[in-house]
Image (tube, rainbow, N blue to C red; front, side):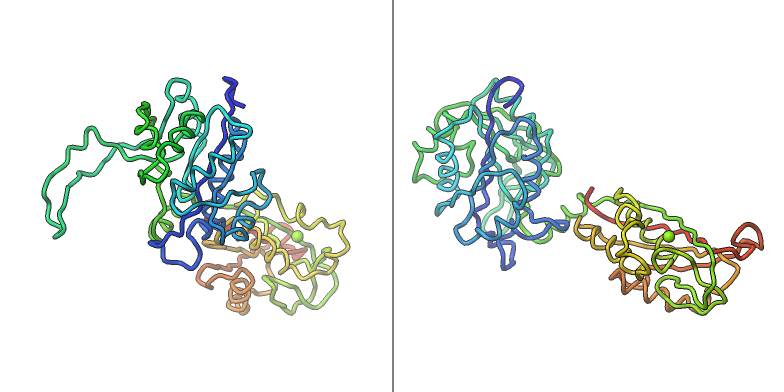
Length: 385
Ligand code: MG
């Protein structure tokens, strides 16, 4: 319920087959930065405080894809679409008729970049108009062209705008208008209301709220959704009796070993914390409490594997990982190449995205006195945040 007391439901139209997209699945179920395109819209509407119910209209073949895309989200059971977009919208509208909302927003699943501000602007304007759509001004000069791709006219663009969704309506008005034009083919829902002689107001749309039609559109959208973040990690382990240390997952012979609950791989711990830090996802202790006996003497590779799985689940990638190992001995240089190769294979990235360096502290401090090894790491990630 909105602050003005009006109920607002949402219909997401996801029944299309997307022939121009060129993939086996309908495009709305393909991943965009790790999540199905449809899910981006669903999450945005679910999170909007003025939205009551969300109904998705799907193709009868897509039930399993829909269930996967909507998993865990508070949405209604989907409605099966019809032969045309208009028929699909009408089916969505009819399914709300038993408990009709005051307002309904109709949104295309192919617009995953919809944001809460655009939704709020549409709902606000519905207080003064029976229909409201978000639009963007047309920036490019428009040409009318003929069948031979020759320009026949330059179209003045001052009075033109590009229509987006969600298109918002007073529910009773749009459902009556849709029923009245059944069988006619109109381009969008605003056109249905226009035909009923009712005024449609425009509000500013969103720059990111573009329609994904081709794989190129998806790649561009992915770039706008991804953000670069940097995280740092630091760790220290002390020496104890032993004959080797684990560094970056590589066994390095030494006069001592490192003391720790796991295999005490100080470099992998710093690297894991750097990746978790870049995601704002806590630290290694949050995910693997030392109190848990399962991690006793555990190979530390599993910590990095876990952080990378978390990053991938969020649709992220590791751009670069830079590790500095700080100790007088053992010498890191002879093992550096093996360490880089090993880290690359654990993280599932090319070796040129990994760097391992070493330094001494000129005999100063605890590392200088040979009491232990320190490591620091910097991770750069690209992920939707
Ligand atoms: Mg540690």
